[in-house]
Image (cartoon, rainbow, N blue to C red):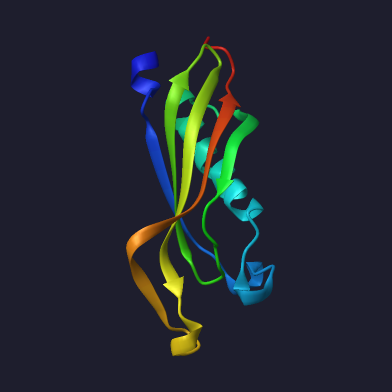
Length: 130
């Protein structure tokens, strides 16, 4: 069973609404990505263990590039370690589309290359196998 869990990857995409802009320049705070990491980790736990699991900790969180209102974020979670009840998951939030208000109110573009905005490693725990 451990082998089937290791390497499991789940991807979510989310549009960042302008209501989530927190700073000048329509910047979104880094905690927004951490919330998305929690969502994708929940799906990982459901797929691998049949339970939503609980987040225990984050380590090595790095904010690498800005996230802005009007972005489309791709959030990827990959299981990198499996213990008896814990799972280590690597996370990456990438900007794949970006709003372009400089071209008009609703203008946007698909980025030629995704922009890695946030990376982290997290640990989740699940109930003991029955």
